[in-house]
Length: 168
Image (tube, rainbow, N blue to C red; front, side):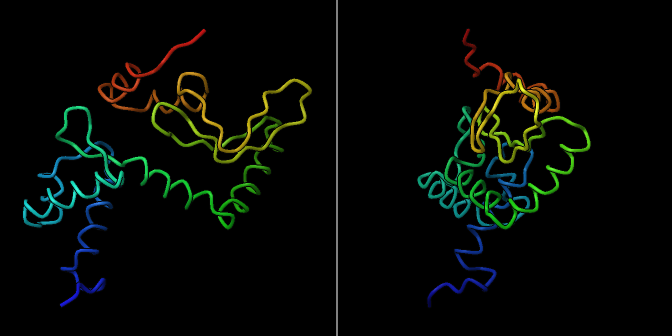
């Protein structure tokens, strides 16, 4: 019998549940931690995580034990939040804020060791840095990146900083 997406035991449901657990975690998770939430057989979790890793939906942390969102899942997420329906509303709110404070306002999201500009409203100052939507800037080179780093647990912040490339 073919798996039915709406059947709680279906492969699709299990895959989505694993992706959701990893994506909603504030840190990389082990298969054991996934199992604590989903109560699936260990072999199933390992097999599905391995398949998701093969597809770049998940990726292993350097220690090889924990999973975090992979490049493909980040691209899917970015595509979703960059959707024109969301962009129109974001832009209107950001424009109003920019007019109120008289400064350029940005919405950025972390993307590996960079911040990606998701939305931006420029001021009319004659001297300003113009960045296109989608531009990636190293974490340590933007106010939003520094703010992001400052809010991370020390271990995660140190790990990210160790992998930064500092150029002059």
